[in-house]
Amino acid sequence: MASSIRKKVELLSAVEKNVGDSVKSYTTRSSTRLKEIKTEHDSLIDVVNEPMKITQGGSSSINRVKAPLKGVGKRRHLKIKYEDTKLETSPYFSPPETKDRDVPDKKTRWEPRDWVQVADNIREMRKGCDAPVDDMGCDKCMDEDAPPKSLVSLMLSSQTKDQMTFAAMQRLRQHGLSVPNILQTDDETLGKLIFPVSFWKTKVKYIRNTTQILRDRYDEDIPDTVDKLCQLPGVGPKMAHLCMSVAWDTLTGIGVDTHVHRISNRLGWVPKPTKTPERTRAALESWLPREEWQEINHLLVGFGQTICRPVNPLCGTCLNNTLCPFGRAQTRYKKEDK
Image (cartoon, rainbow, N blue to C red; front, side, top):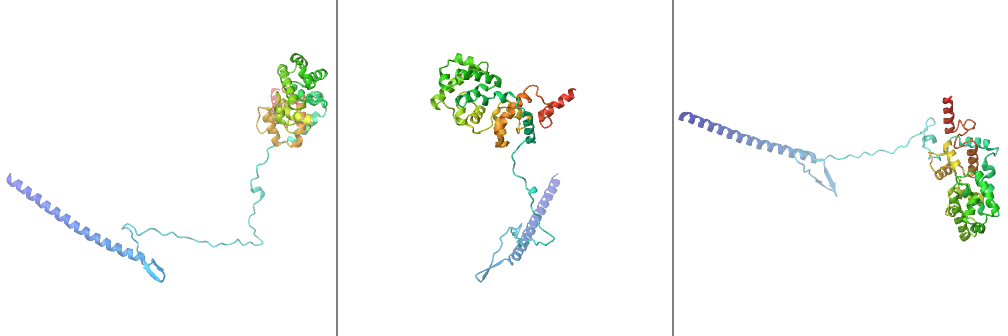
C-alpha cells in the first residue's frame, strides 16, 4: 500500500515539473515573438511616414504617425474638381426648352361648367317676365319720396311671398309710411296693416325699433352702408345688399334669398353644397363676374317662382335639364319610373 502511494506521488511530481517547463518555454517563445512583431511594426511605420515630409521655410521635417498596432492611421479624403464646360450647340441641335404646358399652371379661379350657357337659358325662359317678382317685387314697392319704404318692404318680404308683401305695402302706403307716422301708430294697428305676412308680430317690433333708430341717428333716412344696415333690427346681409342696390343704386354684393340659395345648389354653382344663404353668397361672389351681380338675384328669384320651384320643379320643360345636375337626376328617375 505504501509503495503504491509513493509511486503516485512521484508521478504527480514529474507531471508538475513537465507543466512548469512547458509554461516557461511558452512564455519565452511569446516574449520573443512580441519583440519580433514590434520590430516589424516600427519598420512599417517608417515606410509610411517616409513620403509625408512637409517642407516649411526651406527646412524639412518628418511627422511620424503614432498609430496603435492594429492600424496605421486614418484614411485621407480626396477632393475631385471638375472643369466647367459649356454645352456646344449646332444648327442641328438645340437644348430642350421648358414649354408652358410642362410648367404647372397657377391655381385658377373655380367656376362651374357651362354656366354662361345655363344663364343664357334662364334668361330665355324669363324673357316673358311672368313671375310675381316682376310685378310685385320689393323694388316695385319703392317710393322715392319716402326712403324707409324700400327698407320696410325688404323687412316684410323675409320668408313671405311677393304677393303678400306687395299687398301689405299697399296698405301701409295708404296709412302713411313715414317715420313720424309709424312712430305714432300703435302695435295693434301696425299688425293689422301687415298681416298676414310671416312672423308679423316680430316684424311689428322690428319696424318700430328700426323707425326709432332712423329718426334718432339718420335724420329719418336709410343708412348708406351694409354694415350700418345690418345693425338695424331684423335686417340681414341679403336685405342690406338689396337695399343698397334699390335705395342707393350701389352694388355691394349679391342678395341671396331662399330661391337663389336653392337654385345655386341645384345648378352646381357652388364648389360644394352650402347650407346657408350667406355661404351661398360668398361662393357665388368668388367666381361670378361682378357685372352679373346686379341681375342675378332678380333672374333666379323669378326662375325659382315659375320653373325651378322648391316642390315639383318643372325639370321636364327646363332648357337646362341636360346641363343641370339636379335636372338630369330628376329626368332620369322619371324615365325609370315609366
